[in-house]
Length: 81
Image (cartoon, rainbow, N blue to C red):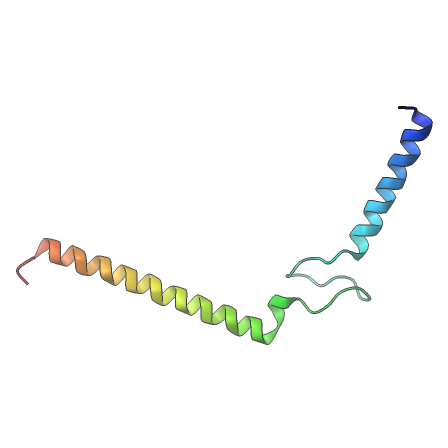
């Protein structure tokens, strides 16, 4: 490919990538620059409460699983009880 065609095309692609990076949403955790962004989903009160409920439910399930394993182990050690 000719350098006279390739290098300006490469420069234009780089400038387009920089421009796109300036306006593209930054994901759920960070807000985009002022005129483009919106409130991140994970920072809303509703989502925070939902995430807290999920975390607590996961902890309860893990504790129930641990307790079940303890019960099985205790029955294996002392089956007469």
